[in-house]
Amino acid sequence: MPKIQAVLFDLDGTVADTAPDLAAAANSLRLADGVPPLSVELLRPFASQGARGLLREAVGLTPEDPGFEHARLRFLSYYEQNLCVNTRLFPGIEPLLAGIEQRGTPWGIVTNKVEYYALPLMQKLGLAERCAITVGGDTTPNPKPAPDPLLHAARGINVAPEACLYVGDDLRDVQAAHAAGMTSVAVGWGYLGDGLPIEQWDAHHVVHTPKALHELLETLC
Image (cartoon, rainbow, N blue to C red; front, side):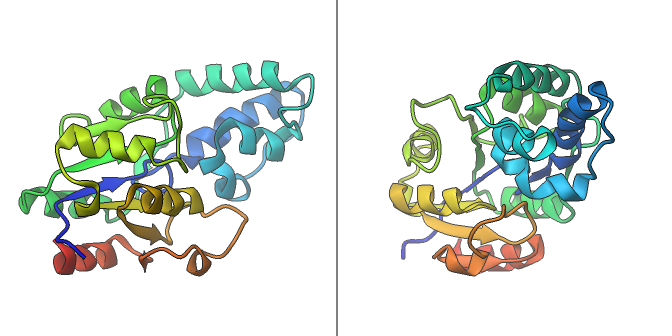
C-alpha cells in the first residue's frame, strides 16, 4: 500500500453533525401539519440519506408519492434558511484536522450534498479556506457510490487516487473509495443508516473515534 499523501472526508456524519438542522427541516413539515416533531436521535440515522430518507421517516413520503416533490421543496427551503443553526463539527474533528494540517497533508471534502448547500456550510463551519478542495454531489455527473467525485478531488489536488485516503460513515463511501482505487476508512461516530453493520462494509479500516483515526494516519502518512 503506497504512503497516504491526502485525506478526503465525507461531510455529513463524518466531519460535521448536520443531523440537528436536517431534522429541524423535516420536523418543520410535521409542525406545519399539526403533528408533533420527532426527536433528533430518531431521525439521526437517516441524515446521510438527505431529503429522501428524512421525508420517508418524518412524513411517510417516498419519491413515488404525489406530494413528495412539494414536501421536498419545503424541506429544502427551510434547510437553506437554517443551514448551520445547530450543526457542529463532531468532537475531536478540529484537533484531527489541525494535526493533518501540521503534517502538511492536504485534505478535502467529497460529499453528496449539492454544492448549493455544501459550499456555504463549509464557510459557516470555518473550513472553506482550510481544505484543499470541496466536491459536492452535483460537481460530477455521478455522485457516490460512483468513483467520479473522488477521482475529481484527486485530480484537483494533484494526488494519485491510490495515495488518497477516503473517510466516511456510509457504505456508499466505502464503495466509492474502492471504485476509485483509494484506501477506505469507515467511521463509527456517524449516522451509519439502517443497513449492514459497519464491520460488514469491507472497509480497509474501521475506526470509532477521531483520535483513533489520528493514530491510524500516523501509521499511513
